[in-house]
Length: 139
Length: 139
DNA sequence: TTGAATGCAAAAAATTTGCATATTG
DNA sequence: CAATATGCAAATTTTTTGCATTCAA
Image (cartoon, rainbow over all chains, first blue to last red; front, side, top):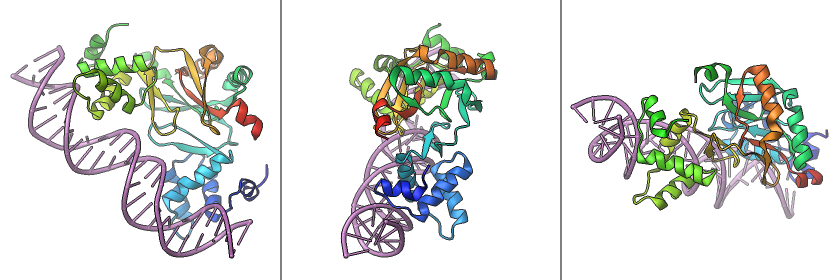
């Protein structure tokens, strides 16, 4: 994987300290909302970063395929590295709890999507909604 | 499955024409944003429905487990019947195209989530992000 | 009749945009 | 130097909330 600067330039874009900081923050935080990112970056950097810059940076990083986002919370998107492929999020629609499952659980699912649609799925960190063990028993 | 009124009352809530209309609209439209629902309902009913009523109705219907939502478009949630289990949505993060896959594709995935976490997943209409066949080749 | 729901308007939250200025390549 | 990106503030868009009124049970 080439570095951020190279990738950005290849896409006709530029490497700025802000973009690097946003990428670093996403990596460091694991998952983060734009709000959390701006807070994290502003805490480290000398000057606070504009929230609009975070949005625009995330857009650029997403275009490069370096980050993606998911909707764990129904309102705010949560960003994470595309390569940070460690688990899948399952969200209970009853109690709102968030649990994690290893990627292997979806291996066959991904393979089938590939086979039938030619779609390269990024289920990693995808938010799967449903009922958790506990809430399920109660209904 | 008991009817809407019974279910609502069992939850200490009430059956109102608005809630029935919202449920009907979701069923008729398949998927719909709050905005689309208010439009659809207002077109049929004599008086236009308040958008806040749509939000509150959807909340109630979700609590009953009758509807769920997904994020096909990253901004606005799209609602659909929980029972309307026909397909899974795959969304390309590159071109934004939306494709569908039959539920069977996820059967094993769902079974495994159940087995490992006891989680009852509703992958139906879940939005899976990734790269479509076309965009995949270009990158 | 009484608690729950609606409608409206106002507030809050989240995201986007315009534009002058600064910065990258 | 030219094109791209930032920062700020204003504008949009989306969702929530307060409250008086209406309505379901």
